[in-house]
Amino acid sequence: MRRVAVLGAGSWGTALAKHLGQKGHHTRLWARTLELAERIQRERQNSAYLRGVQLPDTVTVTHDLEASLHGVETVFFVAPSHGLRDLARLAAPFLVANTAIVTATKGIENGTLMLMTEVLIAELGADRGHRVAALGGPSFAREVALGMPTAVCVASADHDTACAAQQLLASERLRVYTTDDVVGVELGGALKNVIAIAAGTADGLGFGHNARAGLITRGIAEISRLAVCMGANPQTLSGLSGLGDLVLTCTGELSRNRRVGVELGKGRSLQQVLGEMNMVAEGVRTAISAHALAQRQAVEMPITAEVYKVLHEGKSAAAAGESLLGRALRPERD
Image (cartoon, rainbow, N blue to C red; front, side, top):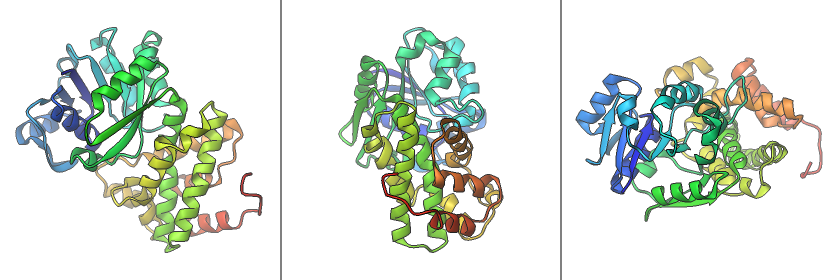
């Protein structure tokens, strides 16, 4: 059994801690605030983000970052994308050289346009690059926490690091695959959140199942264009971290990004929608980075562009739908 730290006590971090603890690993779950850490440790559940899921005794919850990292062999970073850099900077002094690092955050940093593994390597040191991995694939936190069958993927440039994370996570109900395509896994996991907002918006507008299927299909096409342009293997985007995660996030009732889109499609403002959510919908911020990346790489991403305009330029959801439907006709593979 291993000593593991999970940094971030949102729904996904809590689910991972519960899963790892249930496997028998000695797991420390770090919470950003002392109040949250004490409440979870006392109640043995995270009522703020994952109500009703009991944590096993193998999970210890703390707000002390140094204590959470002392002597651990693997650290999972599960902070929102906009907080990952600061958390990595705080954690760096307490990490020993051979600690394995896994990011379970799906996003692209605003401004720098860096992937989450790149952010971690920048803050933790280039010498750790071979020990960094990214976790991707279709995985709602609550379903993983409840032990419902799930398949995910671990990506690392280093084969041994990917296999070690695979063995650490795999269980009878969680099937874990490995790949060396870090770029494909990270871009697939980040960009699907933007497309999920589009799919939710179509649902909110009452466009029906045909429109949703069209958005998913054309969404994976534009995600693949950008990812391949940046060095990803196109097969990755047809796998768990691409199409698999996209289908889940565009159709599942537990999808926060889809929920944002649904409410926007019903005519509500982004501020109203986000004001009622206690969890982060990564697609809102990722739309900024995705739009900027598409422009930098000169890759056409029309769905992403319209989501960006709705979220950050005040364009109406209905007008965005009209823009997509009114685009010039072309062959499907263009």
